[in-house]
Image (cartoon, rainbow, N blue to C red; front, side, top):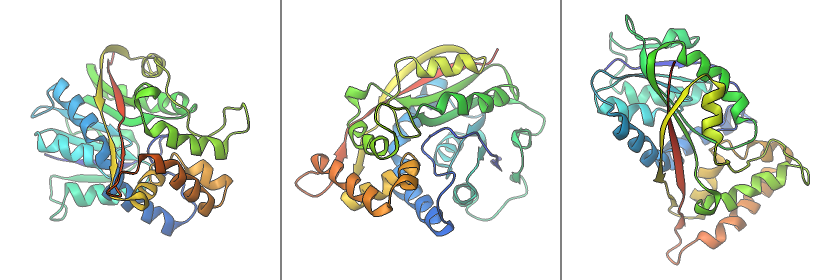
Length: 285
């Protein structure tokens, strides 16, 4: 395995990331909250896509918006050669710790630059992933350019995996995420806050990027937390509340979020929200 992690400025996508935090200290805290609390919630999505594609030895995988690297680590454990790009340097630092725990072996390339710097030596990618879920109205526009560029670095017919929220009625977290929308968007408007995905969002994104849809699936991704405080920290780490934090005081956002979580708190104090996520397999032309 030769993991390559590249700092790359992806267009804003409203995805599960915190690209532009209000302060350095806050960014570091949210990065740790993402890695320690929230990121694991998407493991069923990662594993379902990997099982379907048979990820293993011979796979050369590029992870767009790889964050702190958990999805890359799971692919590497299956024998894949992995590369990752992300705009958030603090998340990339954690990814480096995970993928190179004993330092930086000679065969590992961790560089800072464009997508081209992530290409494995002597071979193009044969799998590209963009797991960060479609979660706001600007996502399609933000990801199209990155997917188009990544497809150009992959072999013809390579798989491109896109992740997104499932039907809103099957996602308990949707009601909580509406807090972000309410604090950000004007009445009747479509501002920067979270909006639920529509039925064909992933297919439309693939077509805009010049990709050919080739199957899809659904997987349960429940969000479970030890207590309401952990739930608030985990959800704030996704980046979906960043516009709300810019529009309102953090104390107000946390209060509104805690109130929205109350119906999902169980008798033992834990918070549990069943969700269904969707993934699309597309192919490069």
